[in-house]
Length: 400
Length: 212
Image (cartoon, rainbow over all chains, first blue to last red):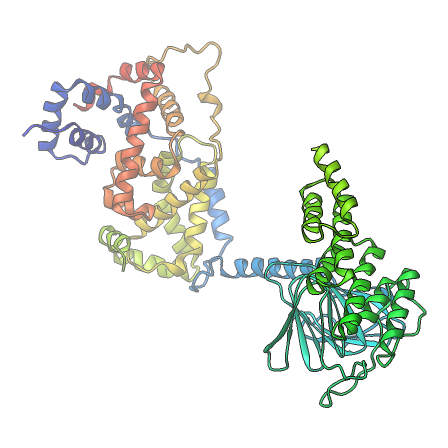
């Protein structure tokens, strides 16, 4: 059978190395005589055979003596197993690990930062993320807690566990602004309930919680959902007929403090007690708004959301106005919309809906502004502001 | 025992009594045993190193490194191969490391063509010189191969080791060794075809007739 070119190449290689049998050599010669390409390839590698004849110059006797002396200078190593690279690799890994730990420790964000006020922090082990840090503020203050910023009211004490992202209100009141981070959990625990949040701004007192932005979930001691609070909504544990906020008997009373506007600008105003009559509380809130203390106003009115209809609607309007005072228009729009939704048969509802339209227009002649005006006109075609709303809508449409 | 180890074991020569006593003396650090070990194997190691690396001024260093490695490794010599095979294997690894490190092979001065030396590749009357000239050119060609292919090819074709022996010396499987030799041949063929001057030089050697 004729030899294939591939086998010819294999035998050619074996022949060069002197590994081919005589029969294979003859077979290869026959193939090379008939196959020019294989013959050419084989001829191209014949130079390899010349290397076999190449006898390099041996080392000189001086060089050999040099090697001999170098060898005798060493002694044979004991018959121990070679240690290979195990320990150098281990040392290198340990070094890298130490450097990483030092770097992380140095560069890692502080577990908390005191931003203002007279907040005092204390911890048994500040470097331990699982150890609780206690914050106490007599006049109030602000603390950064990783993804959240907490405004402590007067006479407030908190406990913070960084590893769990849990803030516990020991007493007083705290307003928390939580930055939304996917997958991150944050909760505030008070006596008798827990507030679970994702990203929002809300105020927790011993008696309840008020949400300014976003959504929070209020959980009971058993982890069951009590209520879900949207922006502008609040929840309190118990409200008695005397229009006073009180704690349930099972819950130890905690001194209630009212949140001030900001840490760096703490109001000297004496915190209002929960036992102040509703009318006086509303007056105090109006006064606070007049003086620019929007936070105090919200704190004053938020317990009144569950009061009688007239009181609640007035409180909710003041709550919405507090955002306007602060220039937080998006929050204000949300709060006014809630007034219009929850109290549709009131004058405040019409005013709120038109205020929403006005605020939208101030933000630009976009579809939101036109939509808000149309909503008002649809709902109140003959309302007090219908003419003005119509004119605005016409102007916006002509601009387009 | 895996396949590579089985192949290696099968081709390694069983050490003779002299090897056993020599290794015992070397392990004990006896000067006479070390002297005998060096004198016995130095010429062969020199030749293997030169064949694999080519003409180099590093020859002394490579030989010395080979023997230092051997002396430091006597504790791990298990007597599964002859001392010659064992030290050859060390030399092969030293050469592969040298080639892998990319150390350029300095050309001895006497091999550098001078101005009056004709470029005519025709072998001169001085056969030794022509062999040096040939060796320089051929090892230049070998520099294009990877160390694994180069060593496998040279051990098989020039040093006449069988496939199994080459596999054992390089610590590779038989299939991998065969593949390396095959691809080395293919790359060398391509290199020769791309060098017409070298091709003419090789043809002038008349090697094609000599082996047939």
